[in-house]
Length: 355
Image (cartoon, rainbow, N blue to C red; front, side, top):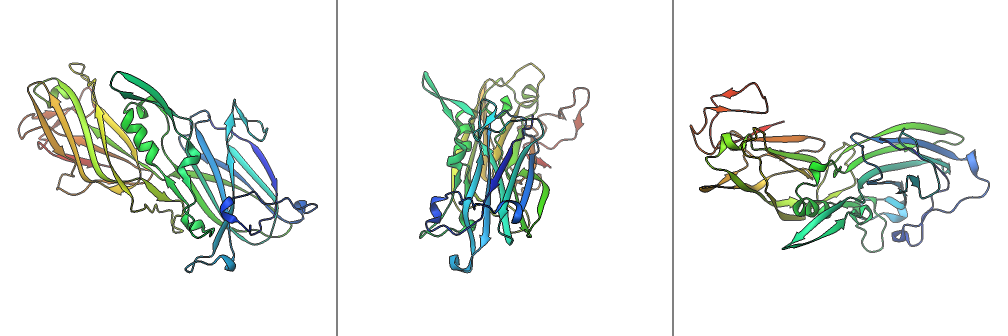
């Protein structure tokens, strides 16, 4: 269910003396609708959660006095939409239409508007030995300014996805329960003109992608009951810039980590496919391995394409990798999610990327 809040901000964007403090601009008395204005209705695909995302609007303008190594995009304000018991923190009401930002009394000039939505308030369970406790995602901590030397550089803002990766590592069933762990974004450049209030619909799309590892029906793939599957990935990026290079691209920072996702309770003799989904920032997988333990043995399988190429996780894309058997000739027939059908002549011991 989508939500809407009418947020009215009469304001003039001015350079703040201490811009890294990110203070809201002062209201200009009497300016009202005589200045420029804009109203955005914001929506995102797949938003089905109730208050489990933090939505933020960043506003940037070009100020030469903030020029830093050729960049003069100054960002001195942002606006959060947070929800408590079904209402916005500004007292606004909700309906099922979306989010709406309305800004009035703005200076007539060029602006960059950057919308971003990150997971927020999603809880997961961490188990250590026989004890367990609950952690909760904090959306605000995921949005980092990246400023240096006291400068307000819009291009330094980034999203830190580390906690979401850790949450999936701690609780591999988190994404199966339907929580939306993806990051959404939309960046637009607009000229605002005097005595004009423009209205615009904005659709946010995923910055992140989904890696879906389909192990098929376990009893058709392995000679003994599968007890544990671990997906080990190194060189996984955890940070991505908010900026999009004006072409919708996703730029990740050179900051990577290693993650291991361990699955138990794999179905056996139930004729069910076992699929492992992991939400991730876009990148090409490096040193990604699947370890399988089953009664009577174990196996190690690299995640590669059918021609030994690399598998890429792409933004707003589900990359499905299908496991085809542990040895050549192990199975002549492989079920691929079709209850009444089969695929024949499937090569063994390799991964195939399906996009």
